[in-house]
Length: 125
Image (cartoon, rainbow, N blue to C red; front, side):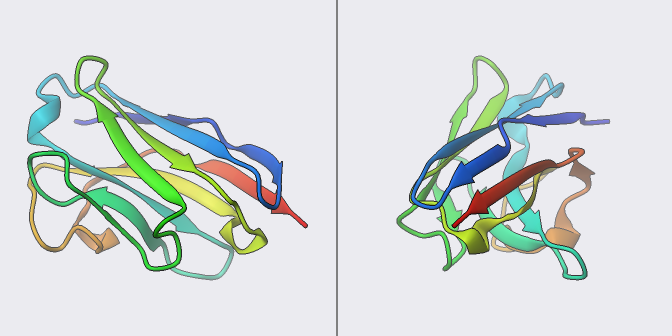
């Protein structure tokens, strides 16, 4: 069972920055594909960013490209989401997700078996 714990959410003004962190208990960190999704009330979880393939290449949702950066620290079993130039429409609960394989469906929430508890990000005008 992979456990995920997010941190780093909060309230920020538009144009500001936040960095989300996700820690995993998985010992073989390089064998799991991880990413971030976000959700607002009444809507499905939307893809934000993920590692699609071994080798640290990251993929991003269209709405965050150029503003968000996904990174990982294999020594610490953690991934990070650096969010810059935040906009009010980025307000959501952000979830860290993991699955035990890489591949082209990295954008699909239904393919991830493990989820963190979520962290709230609120961007004010």
